[in-house]
Image (cartoon, rainbow, N blue to C red):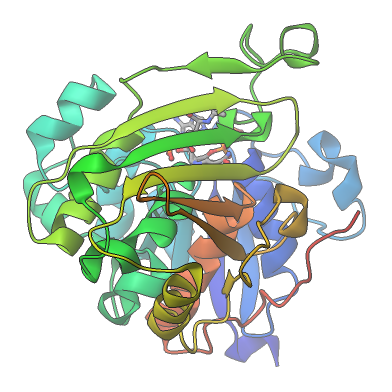
Length: 350
Ligand SMILES: NC(=O)C1=CN([C@@H]2O[C@H](COP(=O)(O)OP(=O)(O)OC[C@H]3O[C@@H](n4cnc5c(N)ncnc54)[C@H](OP(=O)(O)O)[C@@H]3O)[C@@H](O)[C@H]2O)C=CC1
Ligand SMILES: CC(=O)N[C@@H](CCC(=O)OP(=O)(O)O)C(=O)O
């Protein structure tokens, strides 16, 4: 039976995104993990660094060798840092692999814009053009059959799913958008830093990368397309003392009179048939714990008649819908499988 499964490899399998890919892919009925890859620990059992995987995945880590990966797998996930993916992905494509990249390297279509935010060289222009931006609920049709899928950023996923229907419909003024976003520390990856170590973040709340966060051009690129005009946003990121979760709280001026019921109707229609976006009833606002460990994005609204503004609240689990879960959703779409295949886990609660 396993011979009929699609063989997948994971580069960066020792990071948070990679380990989450393993958790979900082990339960995916159409996939077999044939190689877990590390640039620093090849030859070592993966369970050595991750004892929670003992007897669950019995494999030694492979090194980063595109030809060998292509011998073992049909599809490769690159859960690697920005800058690493940009160099590795062309080699993986040349080796004949279908690639789903979790980094920011292939999301920004304009190489110059990429370089001005990421501060290193952009990948080749033809690959930037080839990469399909995999915000599954919005660009899912383009993902079908794609050879290179660029998985969206965690903050952009929560933010764009929360804004796109209202922007597309012309219900909010795109020039008025302010985004106040908060993330758990796993968003920064497994490596330790002064920013994320316990004594620095426990019982603390920090603003970071003020007006220079690399997700700003990604959000603006997609919103501009949805609005049909150039959109700029104010986007402020906060680090919170929790492990997983993103809450994106978005403020915008309404263009006409509209109620929460109108917005709920608009969004439910836009996301009809999409299994992972849940629109809350009026008066119910989502919390990060309500999506913890799952691929859901929950969205709620508050209209303020006094100010003529709407507040939109969108939550995801950064490692699932913001990374590994959405990457598997994109694999499903690319392969023509059910969108939720292998992803039907309920949130962990409490
Ligand atoms: N964490 C999150 O919530 C999200 C992360 N992302 C993006 O996903 C990617 C992975 O993130 P995350 O898992 O959190 O990061 P981690 O830092 O936890 O893991 C990254 C992994 O990449 C591997 N790596 C480092 N350098 C190289 C290299 N030269 N060649 C091959 N592999 C290398 C490392 O493993 P080893 O040393 O064993 O090779 C490391 O375990 C990043 O681009 C990140 O920005 C996107 C959305 C959300
Ligand atoms: C908490 C935290 O540090 N989060 C990271 C999210 C980075 C990320 O997910 O990287 P991509 O750019 O590949 O999406 C940050 O704000 O930079």
